Image 1 (cartoon, rainbow, N blue to C red):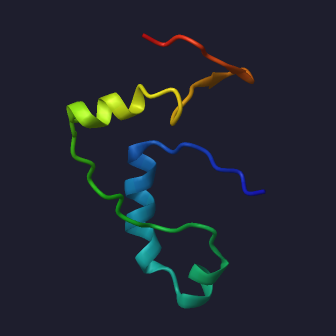
Image 2: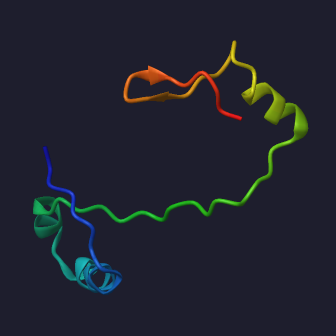
Length: 72
């Protein structure tokens, strides 16, 4: 399994500068991919959605393999 480590923003910017300078052969040897993550917009639940989540027949919360019987 690949070793994924968090990189500093400075290191990521540097890699973005250097990567285009590699030859195709060098790029094929690298195990790195650059992509832009989509921007997530904050959204508030509607009253119907909130009531749906509170329905114990549809949703449950499990912690350490134990189902919570009370949430609110």
